[in-house]
Length: 205
Image (spheres, one colour):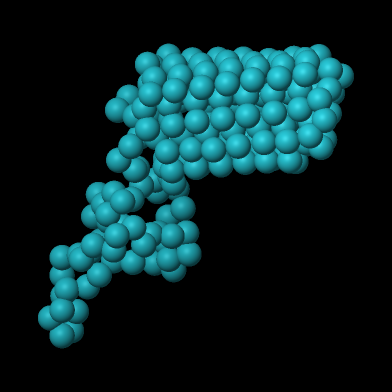
């Protein structure tokens, strides 16, 4: 099987190790192993090839201002970070476990969105509305979070390091157990915010 034909296979199919067409020396069909970074490199795959999971939104790659309310895009291992989601309505959507390093989510509506263990490193959520969103154990390293509304958001166990939180609203946000350091919080609002140590603050964590 050629590398180009392999691109047609979806992530779920690869994870199950489906039998591929073609035979070995003994005439027995070969079986695909799960596609991982390690075996892609071993097989000589180009790192810039994106295998799109089935649950990427139909509007990909340009979903700016799209209505994606309630959609399940959880655990998308590849490709979601290539989708432009600026201004998209993601209220009630599930993007848990999705790899979205470098994602464009500026001014998106993430109200009550489930994003448990999602990766937002070096992405931009500037001006996004994330009221009551669930970011438990999500990663926000060097992420642009300027003016994001995190009111009543769950950020427990999240990793926020060197993030830009200028002007962000953290009213009643829950940061219990979060890694919260070297962030720029100039002009950010802390009101009944639960800090990583479990204590409430009105002045910053």
